[in-house]
Length: 145
Image 1 (tube, rainbow, N blue to C red):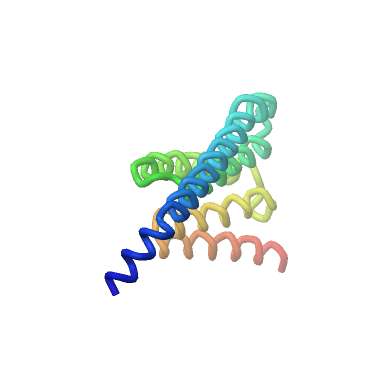
Image 2: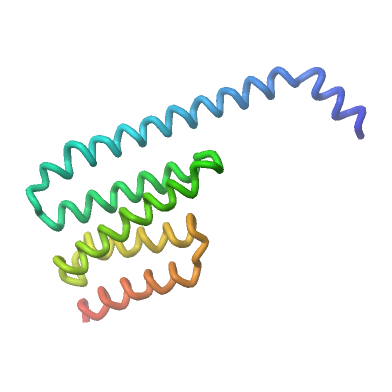
């Protein structure tokens, strides 16, 4: 078996290396794209929201979402910092929504559901994620009835 692996590395090593470099470059471009979107939301959209709680909550959720996407492709040394940033954005959005929007408002429900996805994927807090999603569903479902 070792001979086969050595032969593959010898014959195809450069292809594998080039492939990995190509993938890494795509991750870097994607990360930069997310950073550009975050800058637009932070520096242009949020300041022009005119203290509209719905818009600001939506933009905070959007920032949390894009940071969550960054976490998926970030190196391990960046993940904890990004998780803290995303958590901060989601909690800001959640607080704004809870204080200013009715429980059944689509932006508020969206914030709760996206935050639950973040908790499930990024923070590995499955119980908390399920609790948040269930709470959002029950509040919205009670309003529909």
